[in-house]
Image (cartoon, rainbow, N blue to C red; front, top):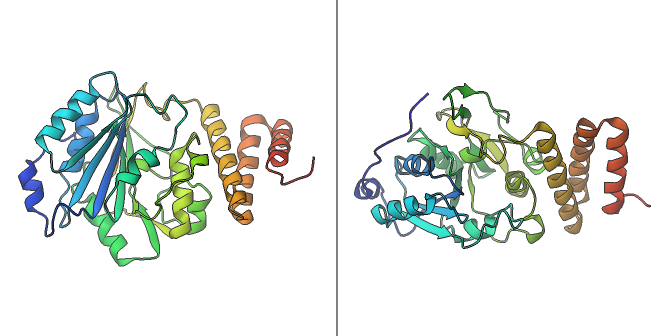
Length: 305
């Protein structure tokens, strides 16, 4: 496993590699963090080591951290004032039910492309962004690309296998909430208004892939080194029980089904209903799962009461 980068390049060295004006970034790196004081330097350092021919900006959204994360970010911004933009919440948005932070972060992005990374994950390959942008620039039918990821158990530093897709994805596969490694993704900045009714979906990343699937396909970039995803007690997803993960996926698919119905996209709504069927049976068993599904369908007005 590659160790986190301890000494990133100076700001002048990052700016010097670019062939165009840094005031017009091609890529906006968007990082969300909350109480990642132990990890946030590694995340930001992973952005700063990127070797690109194009300018990028770094937008970090701090969801009202209380463990010193904000102070670390302020220090980093003072060292890299032309690269880092910092958004600090006064109140924690996650605890208020806002799961999809797109309207707090993505709407600030000036880049043609957006790359995302959680504050407790980090990149180790300095070619990551260049590989992804080079592909998207020459393949207009793809809306996003992503790389592999390795899980790192924080206590032991043991590398663990993570579950997600490691292959190219069709538009339909993205729309139907296929899971991929979130902190590895780079996508076109196509969605200017993110639907308010989806902001409370437990899995905001699945919402993102579904909406982006409206604009194209997904490419797995196998040439890049895997990103690192930490598995630790404060991890929102990795430490959830399997039942909780399935239940959150059911809720996310239900919200997406309702949204697609509102948009008169019944075929896509039925895809999410199909996911709910399979997930409900997995979580509750055939009889109870079928009963809960029927109630969900009635609520969505797909069957009569």
